[in-house]
Image (cartoon, rainbow, N blue to C red; front, top):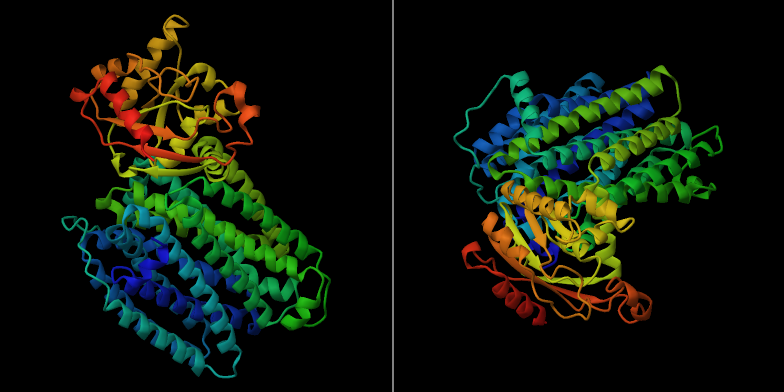
Amino acid sequence: MSQFNLLKQKRFLPFFLTQFFGAFNDNVFKNALVIMIAFSVEADSDLLVNLAAALFILPFFLFSAIAGQIADKYEKSSLIKIVKLTEIVIMCIAGLGFYINSIPLLLSVLFLMGCQSSLFGPVKYGYLPQHLQKDELVGGNGLIESSTFLSILLGTILGGILIAINSIFPVVIAVFCIAIAGYISAQFIPKTSPSSPEIKLEINILKATYRNIRFLPSNRVVFLSVLAISWFWFYGSIFLMQIPNFTIQILSGNKAVATWLLSMFSIGIGVGSLLCEKLSGKRVEIGLVPLGSIGLAVFGWDLAITSEQWPPFSSLFSFQQFWAVDGSLRILLDLIFIGVFGGLYIVPLYALLQERSDSKFLSRVIAGNNIINALFMVFAALLAMFILSYLKWSIPQLFKVTVVLNIIVCLYIFTVVPEFLMRLIVWFLVSTIYRVKPKGMENIPHEGPALLCCNHVSFVDPLILGGFIRRPVRFVMYYKIFNIPILKWIFKAAKAIPIAGFKEDPEMYELAFKSVKEALEDGDLVCIFPEGGLTPDGSVQEFKSGIERIIKETPVPVIPMALNNLWGSLFSRKDKVLERRPKKFLAKINLNIGNPIKATEANRTILYQKVIELKNLS
């Protein structure tokens, strides 16, 4: 089912519209204010623009912990209605600020908008997993992220147009009407039961924030996802918030040019977010994350280089004049692709966060994520103010610093957690060289130990299986395959377990069984190829007795699997690779997964027959 079918369903559409109108209103007001500051205020506009960004983000740091508790404790649709009603009141205050032309009051309104958004964040991301299936999470998050940045696009355009009119009333009327529209759509959101109604609220801001942050590292995958998401918002906020002044000071463009640049970034994010479901096959594919980070670095650096070569002009010019300058297309494409790769980076991380978090604590996890996000974005605003206002560096130099930091941070993350890069390689393999059709994925348990049992056809069987099974899998593999150059790094990153024949290396043989036992006792998935080696002719060979020893030592459910039509493809039987490459370079592979078998009912004969049956399925 396409992700767009969610827009036809009551469980998703009213919520989708509500969050769209909220983000739309934030950006109409925020961009109208930022552009007004950039073009009208005689004081240090760099300082004020980044101060505005910090004021909007600060409430996420201050109040997200309490907001997460509230979102877990109470029914979510009612909370959303309260948030939207509050937005109407805040927009009335904004109207007064525009009417009396008070920058301090409007900055205060920006802070209040951040407060109500900080409550909506945990509710928003806590709502999705309660109403979407696991195979809908990537698509649903893609729609939410794309609509968020579509709202940035439309809000940017509308805010820029309205503030350019010599009257404050269009802005005031627009933000009030959008708030009303959001409140109306919220009335149709279905009720969502509280996930932890028994919790006692901790109203001490410092204590609640500390507890929330301390809670996050308990789940390493979730915590690393939070840090990676926070880095994206650090990177993105620096680029996004500088665009108005970047347009004036570097490109000599007017308000229309600023609107176009912001629009390119927003369009890119929307496209990248929607591409995620297509590229990931509706799975949570973290292999897209390093791909996204590479794109952010490449096109961010190119934007800085191109803008440094921009010729100086004595007066501001229109978009038509901007378009006539050599390099304008390159700047627009850089912004689009920063957005596209940003979408590829952020959507899988949000989906992973929702999939791997305990449902009872999800809103508090999201709140913790928002706290760390806010902290990173406040640091981003402070860094921008320091570089631009204190060091007096240029905006392109700020972009370069940010890109260098991005490279350092990503290299660190991917070194400490090589699973990201491993998944990128796996994703590339199963998305380009092979066309894999999985069947029976629901038989893989979402948590708890299990022993996976599969036939062995090619050198890359573990990569194919690991690419489609959502949980990390510990593979038991022949040590000579484990030690294949390049692939060894991938297998080691996946914590594969090398094994040798008892006669070849008795110590390695025993150590492998000990490692399997420990992995299963830790609740991991372990995959074994019971044939003991690659098939010499494509058929399933007799199963060795090692699988029975594993089941006896650690009784866990056993899940039979079979790879079909992989024999003769690029990586099957090393001595036949060149001969068979033209025949099955883009092989259509079937991955069939059978029902779990109780340990008391499993032996190598039964498992052999099950794998044969699965292999013969079309």
